[in-house]
Length: 423
Image (cartoon, rainbow, N blue to C red; front, side, top):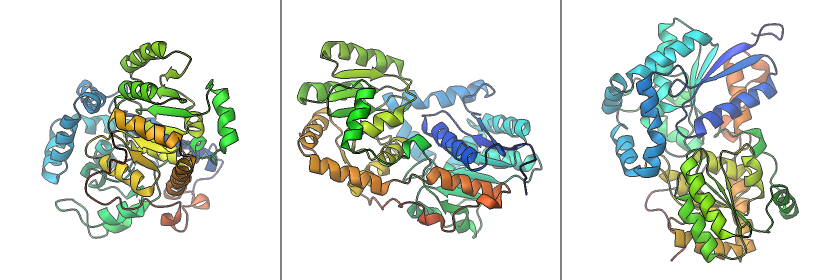
């Protein structure tokens, strides 16, 4: 057992900056660990896919994710579906992804961690191999950062535990996957603790007066704020959607969070210049995203798991406009099924949805309540406790009932997404 007199225990958090969700989840858990064990653990966040030590080929392949989901989502869907089988995934690991194994091994060797956590699906299997070849006893766990549907690469590695966002996902994937290396004890490896978000998103939701005051602090002059976000990549056709809202809906202010998409920032800035009266404000990668979500009357964006989890914790109603084919379709179904949001894929549908909700405060309040109901604000803390227990800190062990931490997502069912707003 570790003691306070010992130097901080190194923990290796492996991420991949394909989108912003993997880093955000790792940072949230690291933040929670520091709160639970101040100065006693040292989480090291490392990106073996796009970081300085990553091979050039790996950086190039990982860098294709953002442009692919923005410009050719059908191509991503083809890759996602094709690789979602043991045989094809194995072939991919032996060829295109082979350099990842060396990159992860170097990170593990440099850190010599007491525990390894994979926050990215491509990294889980290389982490296990690096641990085994290095003759280490460090546990390896995976924290799945997809909300409803997990690609095979998230769950087929022989890790010690897999932290999943819901009891439903745990039950779905607890059986022995065909062609995988798991044994019949695999069911015990799935631990439903939620999807971690940073502490600033997990404060109690604001009331109307508090939201109005926060809007003023952010420079919003109106009383009804629509926040458009496309995640770290700024995806989801935000300019067209912002233009539709400005053109068709009166009495709303629009803030567009463009992430690291500089081209989008330039295009929306030109649109803002034509909108006049400060109705449209443009922001890049912001450090106060929680403030924008907490004061928003409506949050608009694609069905990214991080955005959904953060908005739910902030009690923000959602209007979803798109999803990355494969891993995010179930997210949109989950939100609409819970009553926390609508799905409006076309700009005209989006504008109609916002106009109707603008005139219906009861519907907005119901969506806000549903968002809070489906949130899991303690997920990062519960995952941190679980990691602490595996790392030799039983004094902050995991909750007695992992599945009771917050509400588990309901089964979104199958079939087509409901388009709830007509043209």
